[in-house]
Image (cartoon, rainbow, N blue to C red):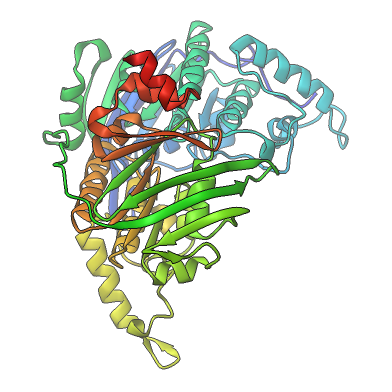
Length: 520
């Protein structure tokens, strides 16, 4: 069988201490004399905004980085990790925000990857699969060892990462933003699993910026800001408002958008039908319209056609039937570039897959669409000085934190990547904006900023489709709310007339007419 010690075969981690950790990157002090500790059987939340230093600190505990100063103690013994293999050997596992899995491999192949087989060079995947089934049953993970990764949902892929860590005998597991890409139902399932793991003696470090999740799952919480520890306390002894102030350094006030008089119809969708990736119909006759100066929020549980609708409107997915009109012009068959030219902007759901090129610099990502514009060329040559000036202007205007314009975008925090994509899309003064999950995985401060920018665009007359799985976000920002279920619009309601119960019923597939009857 592929080697992978159980937690009993490795040392049981009773206490971890990180003492006076300092970590530098070019132009950035990521961790400034950070002290952090965790005890066996504890869920210790590490809270902070994007770029606060949370992930950097934990990557040092996992051996991905070496501290420039400070030391790591496990059960009072000093440890030096030169690689993740050293950390794994010590009983530490890490579930990364962006999963470290190979899509074309099966679950069993991904779990066994890098481990020795008892029958080398032949793999003993049957024994690996048996162990996976045992772990799945023990912790309620429900994963098929023979399934290919590309066939699994995001939540199922995360379960595979947890099984990988457990298979390798991890006593302490670091979870880096584990709920950033999960649906509410998947978050609930994850928390059930985590509570089982703690009951079984595991220790968890839970990195997040979602306060309600931290309050629910953790026993202690440590807040970082700008690479420094702001404070550590038992979760039960602090309020959400106090944590927000510790994270951001100021009060964060809820938004209360004022009603606006909307203008003419900007975006009209008629009987839209679209196929999904698996050959089934993802959209089944979708009809709605958005006016100038209006935000229409699209609510629904993930997987009901939201992604396909956004991609279809943006021009990266073909329609099988129906029409898309922008200012009464039929754009159904136009490519993405042409749609951009006539006033459509798109903030995609998967920012690192569809919104940016991870190895390109900040400046290069600003000009992904506009590099051929006459504004930035001299004949056949690019005008780099003008491009740099404009990129610098956007970075400053949208408060994007980056060491320089030449920094690869993959080195920025999630919130700053999202702000850069928004800066690029809004710089064209679009007539229509498709914003798909614009604050997913983004901290409180960046979320507040993005919301303010969306409302500013609304005031400037942009028609905005806000696609979000965060019902609170939908209810706060939207003028009208449409609910999508299994590729159909179940109803469209005015924000002030909609209740959470009504929206929830429509999200479960109950028609608007029946919903009104049930709640009247």
